[in-house]
Image 1: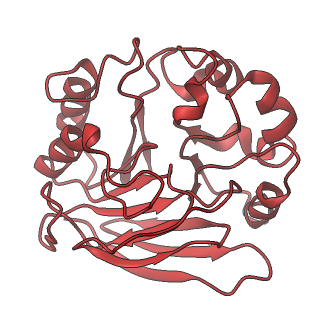
Image 2: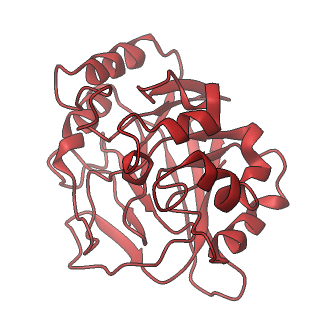
Length: 266
């Protein structure tokens, strides 16, 4: 599986460089983590600025929307028009599916969008999430959405609106969370909902806003920060096993920064 967000910018070539990292792996499921195309997520932008590079993987892409998908239309119409059924129920944008021994959950962190109806405890999406977690028979769980719960990025920082997502996933013993929004790369140790390191039950978060948009800065590391980098375009490659996972941040050609490691499911 590969994952990245903040991708297509009209007139730029960085998204093409990151797409080239995926071309050689025809089996990989592709998770795009929001702000998939700039600037307003219009279907025309998807077709002219996203499709030439990342549209090659559309038939195996499982997306989530970012804030830019909502800039022009309050219902993210361009996003849902382009991805169709792969984006989940129209207007809601959250769904789940199984991949091997893993259960994957795509969430919509555009909490203020009218049709989404919020992200907090008791919201329709949070209740759906808890129900979905209860019904999953898989031993490992990964969730992904656009706005990272924890981030040291200087553009946005941590987003408390998704705290109820983290709590629900923590309560269910989930394992990995992916996000974008900050145009940089961050990896954290497993964290409790408080943000403190919790190796026994915590969720490991990756921020992968490195798909092609202009990089942004990083501030002071958070308590659970393990590594962070800005200025490197690339993708996160995840290999999912029964009870475990490997990760590798793969940079675009000509760049040296990388990151790799492994973890086990709870």
